[in-house]
Image (cartoon, rainbow, N blue to C red; front, side, top):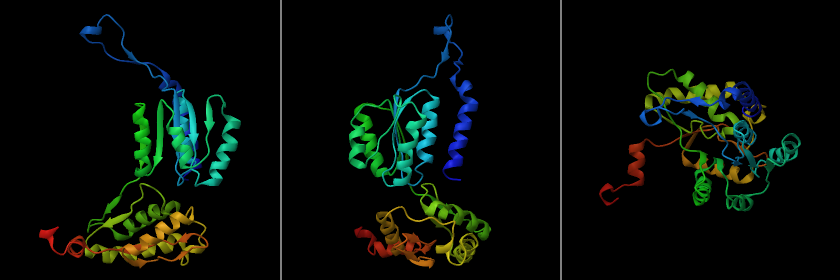
Length: 280
């Protein structure tokens, strides 16, 4: 669902619409161009660099690649070194199906990516964290290279008191825990009244049990954390509030179960962090 089907759909879309996309687009003339013809012609940028992340290592590599190929560009592909198996498959298979004089797969970690960014590209497509995004954007600025940054951020979910708590819980739990929770646009915290919280927490527990069973660790539908570094990062987040649901983890499997943390209301949190407002 998250990787292969989306890539297939992107290829189908490009094949279906490529002739239309390639056509010149006529535009109206004005006084200065009255005796001329005016049109918009789409042309390739040239050499494109695509840097993919680890959480959707196939999807976020192949989908921008399809667009780059459809637009007539040559492409350098940089898979994430964290998703080692996908990186290996891309490095082995893509050269078998793409012209190696026009498309290349570059392997390596941050050092190799840094070396890549020293070169001039005609377009850069990067998906990842804001921290690395700043590095990529700074490198692109040196050559005035146009760039697309698809970065992670905060995704609050506001639940009104008139909402049905079970409907909300089903939707939040489905997308929050999809792909082991590692989706940049998944809802990462919920804002609601105390009254709704009391109704929503048991509804979320019901949704988690329905999706993953009484013991989510044995569920075939729940993934694992990609490496030890991110396992420790996520485990540290469990200390940011009171664990109301779940919170079990297994370092040997890099498993962290579906969890719900309850934090203090904002006004209480403000008093706790800043007990003397005039001095803050």
